[in-house]
Length: 246
Image (cartoon, rainbow, N blue to C red; front, top):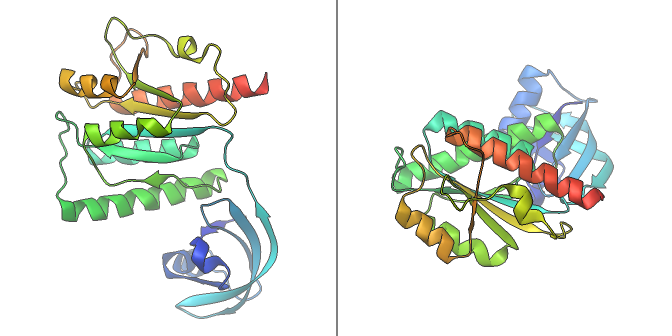
């Protein structure tokens, strides 16, 4: 069944409108009597039936409603801003993997440096990409996507997390399993920072270290930033899930 996103504040109003309704009406040809699924990105999903419809909006009645609990562990991604299409890919995959927060970082080596005006459009686009990814994979929780910020500002969020790691090729970087030894995954809040092409600068690495981030090895090869993000997030989420099941 096709799923459509609706903001939490609008769910109880019983009205689907905007781009979601246009897609439902024009692409799926849904009309009065059609049953669709809606979700609010904060854990609520509902089966609804369209009762009234026109070009601008549809009124629906809720037939069933359920709550999906959030993942047992919370993962935050700090991602140095790469080229547009690469960041789009990272947003999609991070959403599919259940990441709860994303901090795009304006690293010293980031090629893309959006203006404040352009940042609004970028965040809106990233949110749309996250919604589409959530629709396709059946996810009822959307990540909170922050405005681009400095490495120092993102690293300052470390205090809200139990474990913080940054991808590194430095000699003291250790594999993930070493950091998870003895960790209790239930309710764990983990933060993962991935640098740009060329990696974080030594100064930025110093900022992360000063906030308690630990250097994480992703193997001996130099990975593209999108490959590094997906690889590290996949491994982290898998290991946390495995530990929780033991």
